Image 1: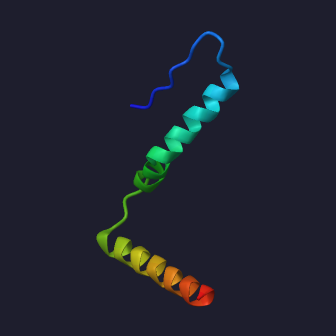
Image 2: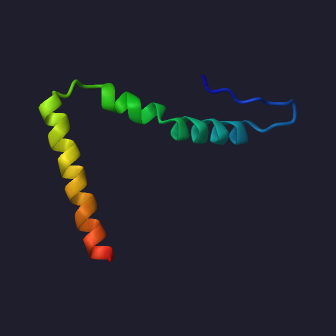
Length: 63
């Protein structure tokens, strides 16, 4: 559970910005997007392999 403690003099835009940052850091929205649709285990393996290939290609370009 993500909580933001506010005092009487805190601004709403600051609280919203802080809340969004905590939600992103916790990975809640990414998890929801990933769980929105079922992916078969074979599809998950293919996606994972494709991501590894992209990372290797990017690393080869950099160095």
